[in-house]
Image 1: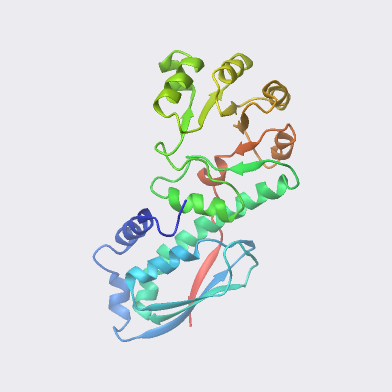
Image 2: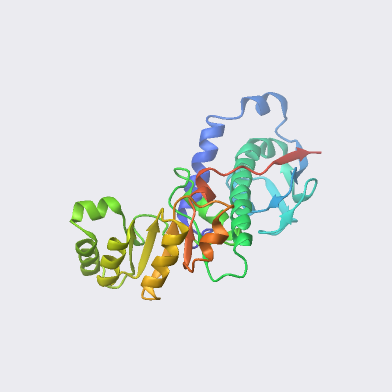
Length: 277
């Protein structure tokens, strides 16, 4: 995924600025003269994995009149009090872009930080930590970027770029085998992933030639058994009820991928401020 050249990025930031600025910043217009210039710093108020600065550049590029000097690199671990960037330019523009810029940095850094925690938990094991489509509506580009900076892998971006047959597809199609066959016929060049919840469905998915099989909410023991049954005939993805307390045990079953909705759907924002002066 080319995050920084994706046309969605400009649209996301355009909407965020429109949402916040509307017809204009009435407070700033009342207090700050048009010719005023200032310096500002973006400062960490706690430790976290820093991510999202390219999006901040885009915020102020759209607004104009501000220069940014990056100090912390993407993916760096910062601590409270660290200065991550210096900004200079029109005071009004700094104030107009402050909240949108910080909202983005706080969310993306929070996602990168949470992802890094999961990645560190499975260090040394041959498994990938992956995101899902459980992202904030309209912010998927930013959310998945945060996962990648944190060391995770991106699952499909949307419904259009990967075949993933889930329980409702299976029910509507009349079974795992039928669903896989129909998907293979329609998209013979793409890998086919199918979700299974028991060993009968696992056997059916393997017989149908699925490339990736998602083990939905299986116990640790059942995942171990599934790895043995599969015997490398397909990639296995563990999904459901994954937390920091059990992710290593899940990884040790031998699955290839662990997908975690909590990386993006319930993230804690990093604490970041911007100070003028």
